[in-house]
Length: 287
Ligand code: 3HC
Image (cartoon, rainbow, N blue to C red; front, side, top):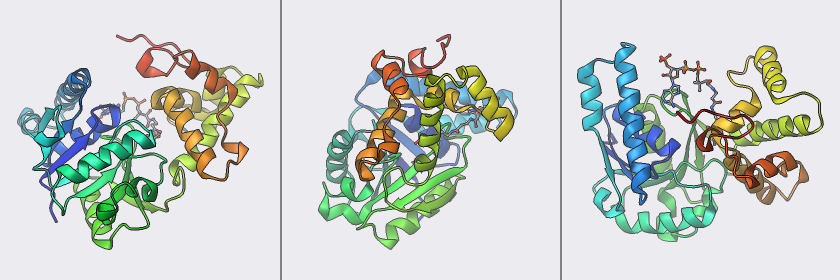
C-alpha cells in the first residue's frame, strides 16, 4: 500500500520531524495539535529546515516548494480524517496517549493503521483502550532529529496484525528510513540500552567522577558518540529521560537499576528540561 496522506498527532519535536520527513518523501502530512503555538513552532521549523536544505543545495527551491505544499496544520483531528495513515507523537504519558487513541479510532477509517511514536510504553497496553482496532495499533519509534536519523524501531503489540506490520515496514521505507523490529517490553531496545547509560552519566556527575563537560568529552572522544550522554539528555529533554526511566522501572519488575538518578530528578524538579527550556545540564542561548 502506498501511503498518500499521514496524520501526525502532536506537533512537538518528534511530530514536526515526522511530518517534514514524510513531506520531503512525497507524502502529504497534516499535523494535528490543539496548541496553536505548537503548530506555529512546527511551521517555523519546517520553513527553516527547507530553506537550509536549499541553501546547502541538498534540494532545489522547487522541491522545497513541493514539500511545503505537502504540509498542513490543523487543531481538530476531524480535519485530518481523510488521512490513510495516522501516527501519534504526543507526550510520553499513557493516559494522554490512551485518550488520543480512543479519538483516533473514532476519527479515521476502519482500515487506517494507528501507529504510536512512543519511546517506551507498551503497545499492547495502549491498544487495550480500543479492543476492536487493536490489530491496527503498532509502535513506530522515530529518533531525534527525525529527518537525519535513519532508524525506525517497529514494535508489534499482542494483537497487531501481520498486515499492519507489513504496511508499517513499507511506510518506513517510503520515508527513507530503515525499520528494525523490537519486542514489546518497556523501553524496547533503543531506550533500554540508551537511557541507563545516560542515567549513569548523571550518577557519575553526582559522584564527582568528572564535570559534565568532561564526562561528555570522554564519551565523545573515547567512544565516538556524536554527543556526550549529558548533552544528549538535554537534547532529548530531561523530563523525557526521567519519564522513560520510570516507564522502564514500572514495566520491568521495578528493578531499581531503572530508577532515575537523584541528579536528573533534581534538575527536572527545578524546571530544567534541557534545550527546550533554555537550561538543563547546560545553559542554552534560546535565540
Ligand atoms: N532537523 C533536521 N535536520 C537537522 C536537525 C534537525 N533538528 N539537526 C541537525 N540537522 C542536520 C543538519 O541540517 C546537518 O545537515 P547538513 O550538514 O547536511 O546541513 C546535519 O544534521 C548535522 O547537523 P549539524 O552540523 O548542525 O550538527 P552535528 O554535526 O553536530 O549533528 C546531530 C547534529 C545530527 C544532532 C548529531 O549531533 C547527532 O547525531 N547527535 C545524536 C542524536 C541522537 O542520538 N539521537 C537519538 C536520540 S534518542 C531518541 O530520539 C529516542 C527517544 O525515544 C528518546
